[in-house]
Length: 271
Length: 92
Image 1 (cartoon, one colour):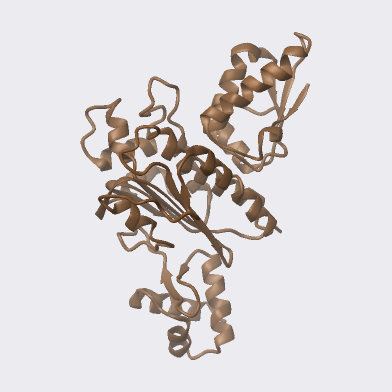
Image 2 (cartoon, chains in turn brown, blue):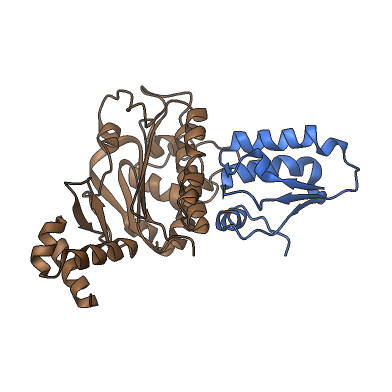
């Protein structure tokens, strides 16, 4: 199929917001097989992503500076943004660091067993590891209500989607302990993402984790990453331009007390 | 002496576990080696490395073995980026 058909499909999905495969086949006038081939290519390139499971699957376009309409693979965001928190579903609930560690440590071997590129797997999973570890390092044992985190991932075609959420005190409250001048969630998030050695755990020598995550996002070439705390949401399409991190922070209409992170990363197969 | 870091796990994250790994290594292995012997850290079989684990691991080891540590070369992308992030260098 020619590239202009791909561009037409991209424009069509963008205009509709969400389009099913049937919509796209009807619109494009080419064979279903050719459309599915094209959709798969577009997913691998990181142009579009799928939401839902058969028979209800919708295709969406990745957009720069994403607003609040981010794809969710589960109810994790609703859970994180609720005022009171119940325990997450057992399959995704990590009430303590050792449960988180156990589940996290299975992710990389699972992906490598599926023959995904080990170097991309290493980068993506290391970023997930730092984000997940923060849920415990910056909250335990002073949880406000529900302890632990929601850790969920799925591998659909060749795209890894992973969400990590906690209902802890959030980045602003954590950093304010060492930098009382911080007033806004946006300022705190930008500080956490860009300033080395700034940590709510000072005077311990820490504070590299989220900077490392930004470096990983600068090296990955496809997909998206978002991190929200309070009403500040960092959301970027990859690769991240690390000189413009502040431009990717937007105000979310749905604030959360703790943190919510979402990784949507197409991973190539090992050559 | 060469230390296979994957004996601590293949996905290494969290500061407490990094510190514990270093303390165990010092108590159970390094204490018994001659004072002049170099300690070669081999990350070759590690799948995923993070700055939190590595910074704590190396910081703890350096308190006693500062001049005797060598980090062996690795092609793993997370090992490379982690070491770069925490300002450590591999042997060429």
